[in-house]
Length: 186
Image (cartoon, rainbow, N blue to C red; front, top):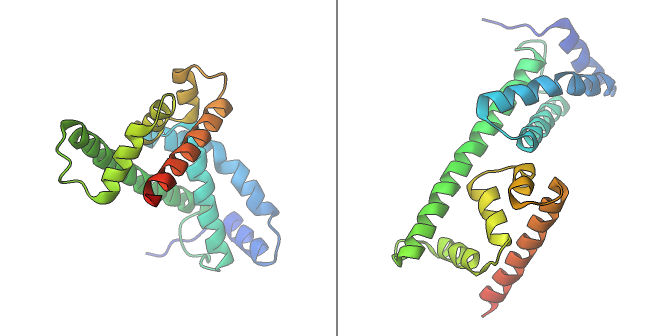
């Protein structure tokens, strides 16, 4: 069964091929809010995570337009964009679940003294995490293990704004990198 893109989408593709990106800019803005609401509702993403997925999905769409991979056959560009977003989200959630499970398991084994089953990288990560001080430990745990948005972390940690939490996280990661460099130079 062949699908046919709406005429508006075909016109957008043709305009893009001729170097006119204005219809694509309009498309981006027109579908952004619906996408953000949909992805948050369907997959429970925070506002920042949903925005990241939309941006990444749109970049894939843009790349496929540049590579001339889209023609008049296929689903509407909106359906195509939402499908890309769904795939990106599922991959990220799967990765987060794997990392969270591995990290929690590694932390448990470390705390119980049964670290024999951990690989070298996991041991290093657990050791590095154990060396962090507050508030870095909490920020790293809330962001990477619990998957909270920076806005939620700011609220939980009592920071003035999301930007303060982002800056603190950046400082914590810089400290962790410096600790890692020191540990690996020994």
